[in-house]
Each structure stands twice: as structure tokens, then as C-alpha cells.
Image: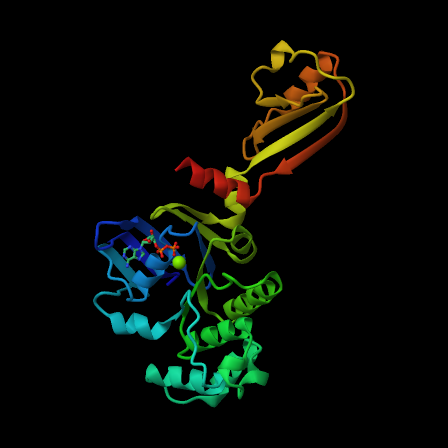
Length: 307
Ligand SMILES: Nc1ncnc2c1ncn2[C@@H]1O[C@H](COP(=O)(O)OP(=O)(O)O)[C@@H](O)[C@H]1O
Ligand SMILES: [Mg+2]
């Protein structure tokens, strides 16, 4: 089956009446990296915790592998790993012991070869016998990932895996997550860093105030919603906008030498040809032309602000 997880009409209203999730519908495909992108307080952790059994949804269904989680929670629990937002490691344990212990908690037989592979994949092998409290923050985070992988989950949740991690280490973490995907694990990560979603994800869901505003493949998201801007540097300052060009979405710079035209990059007829010929007819020539695709960041900010 291609869908590993599906959420249907999922709602969570916390005690006191706060609606943290509003009618969430989402399907996660086996093998993908899915980024749930949204500002602080959007409901990302609530969504993850609902799947992991740490939050009780108010209504709606969650199916893992086609099985209703509420009906067969054990099945899901054995196959899902969670790296929570807060670091909580056993300071006086070693990575080697803590991962073995975690695996034991899930009732899995001891497997030195598997644990070795997990620690090697996360570049923790050299540190396997060091006390966790002596490791760096980035290493501790990786120990958490190793623990979450101890029972060979098919689906791994990473809740803000790089919040508070410095830029250098974030890149390293992204590489580790990609390597995990290659081992066949489906990954759902939450982030409020746009560049992280843009860099990592196959698909992105944008969540704001408990609503999943949209879900799309990263490339399609940028293509579909992306507005493109064309900047025309004119040889002569433009006195008045030629009458025939009033239908275009144009902005003129203060010195009247730079005209910018915003258009829908997905539209069949983007109007560029008409704009250029209209300018020429009116006697204006261009010295230079540049185009710029709006980034995911601009899309995200405009969507979240619209709400
Ligand atoms: N146990 C709780 N009781 C009441 N409100 C909560 C509780 N947990 C979270 N919230 C609220 O729900 C909203 C979503 O929180 P959360 O899911 O942690 O967001 P995110 O992970 O996207 O930052 C926030 O406004 C938060 O204050
Ligand atoms: Mg959170």
C-alpha cells in the first residue's frame, strides 16, 4: 500500500476550549520525507502527538498501514518512532546502552548488529561508549534519533529536529535524515524554518492556527503559487505609462527607469510579449531584463498573513 498514514477530519480541542487542530485531512506516502511547516503554536506538535498516542484527539480518525490507530494502537506503536521536540537523554548512560535499552522496551530481541548500524549511520559509533552527558548538543540530538530508531520503525517523526541547532550542524542533520530515508524509513518532520522544509522535503504541508492550509510537492508549491517578477531597466525614464499597458500589474521606480512586472509563472499567457511590444511601440527600449521567482519563504509569509 502506498499510503502509510492517513488522518481524516482530525480535531483537537484542548481543555479550556482551545482548538489546536481543525479538521485535518492528510495522507502520507510510504518512503517520503514530509515537512509540516508552520509558525510556533500552529499545532505541529499536537498533530504529531495525536498520532503517537500522547494527545487524545477530540474527533476524527487516524489510520496507520490501513489500521485504525484507536482500534489497534499496539500495531502502530511498534512501527512508529518519535524524536520529541525537547531533548531528554539519559545523562549517565552511553549511546550503546540507551539504544539497546530502548529496543528492549519495545520487546524486540537484542540485536548488536542493528544497533551498530544505527549508530554508524548517525555518526555516533566512535562515541558509543561515552557518557551521554559528555556529548555535544548535536550528538545528543542524534542519540535521540538513534533511540527512536531502536525498534526499527517504518515511520519516524522528528519534531523540530534542528530547533536551536547551529547552521553548520543543521546541514549535517539534514544529511543524516536523507540517509535515513534511503534505508526505507518514512519521515515526517516539523519545522518553522522555511529553508529546512525547502531543502529536505518531498512534500510540504503548511499549517497555521490549527488548519492545514495546503499540501503539495515542494516543486509544485513553488511553481503553482510562485509569482514571478520581471524587472525591466529602461534606456530612457518612462514619463507616463502607455495607455495600452494599463492592464499589466506594473510598478515604476522613483527615478522612472525601472519597471517591474509581476505575473503568474504558471499561466499559459504571461503577457511578457505584449508588454515588451507595447513598450517598444511607445518608444521605450530596455537596457536589461531580469526575472525572479518568488521563493517558498515569500509564499509562506503571504499565506500565513492572509489568514
Ligand atoms: N496541553 C495543552 N493545553 C492547552 N493548550 C495547549 C496544550 N498544548 C498545546 N496547546 C496550545 O495549542 C497550540 C498548538 O500548540 P503546538 O501543537 O505545540 O504548536 P507547535 O508545535 O506548532 O508550536 C498552542 O497555542 C498551544 O499553546
Ligand atoms: Mg511544537
